[in-house]
Length: 337
Image 1 (tube, helix red, strand yellow):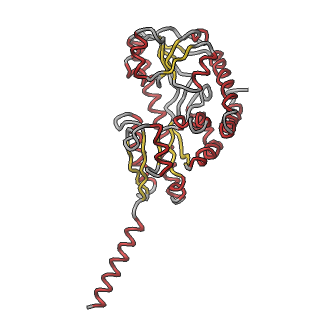
Image 2 (tube, helix red, strand yellow):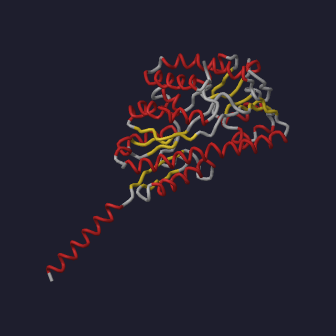
Image 3 (cartoon, one colour):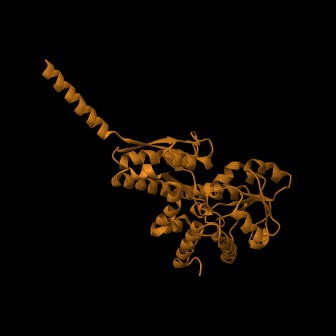
C-alpha cells in the first residue's frame, strides 16, 4: 500500500512538472490606445498573433488605454521597473529622459514614408536604437508607423511662405523650433483647448494627427484647409520590453514576437493609407482644400529640420549617434545630399 501511494505521488509530481514546464510565459503589455480604436484593435490582433507564432509558448496579457499606469508617458517606466513587461506607446514620450528618444519616435522632416523608416530600422537601425533603450533597461522590439500627419488650418497652407505668422497649436519640443525658424508662431497647448482657440482666433490652425484622425475631430467643418500628403511629422509607436524579461525568452519566442510586431506594423500603415484615402474624398465633398507642399518647399522644411537636428546632436551622445545614423541612411536613399 505504501509503495502504491509513493508511485501515485511520483506520478503526480511528474505530471505537475510537465504542466509547469509547458506553461505559457505571460507578458503583461500596455498600450495607450483604446480597445475600440483601429490601433487598439491591431494591438489585440498582435496579442493573438504572438500566441500563434510562438505555438502557445508566449501569451500577451494586453491592457488598453494605459489601464495599469494611467498615463501614456509613464508606461515605459512601468515596464522598466517590472510592474508590466512591455510598453506599446512611443519613444518620443521619453525625450525628457534623453533627447535621443525624439529620434526613436518622430524624426521630424526626415523620412517621407513609413516604408523608408522601416527600411532604416532593418538596416542597422534596431541595433542603434537598442544602444539607447538598453541604457534604460529596455529592449526595443519594433515600430508601427501610421504615416505622415496633416495640419488643420483656417487659412491656406500652400507652401512655406504661408507659414509666416501662422499661429498654430504645436506639441512642445523640436517641432516648435523648426516651425518658428520658418516664420510660424507655434503655441504649445493641450489639444482639448484647440476648438475654442480656433473659434476665438487665438490660433489659425493645429497639428494633431493623420488626416483620417483629424476628420474625426470635426475641426475641418469650420477650418477648410489641410496639408496632405503630410510632410512635417510621422510619429512611430514602439514595442519595447523590460530587458531582463526579454533576455529570459528563448530565441524562437523572440522571433515569434518580432514576426507578430512586423505584421502589426504593416497592418497599421496599410489601414491608415486606406482611411486617409477615404478622408480625402469626404473632405473634398465638404469643400476642404488639401494643400500638397511642392518638392522645393518640402526641401526647405527638411533644411530647417536638419538645422534643429544639429542642435539636438549636442544634447546627448546617444542623440548624436542616432541622428547621424538617420542622416547616413537618408543620404544613401537620396532624401538628402
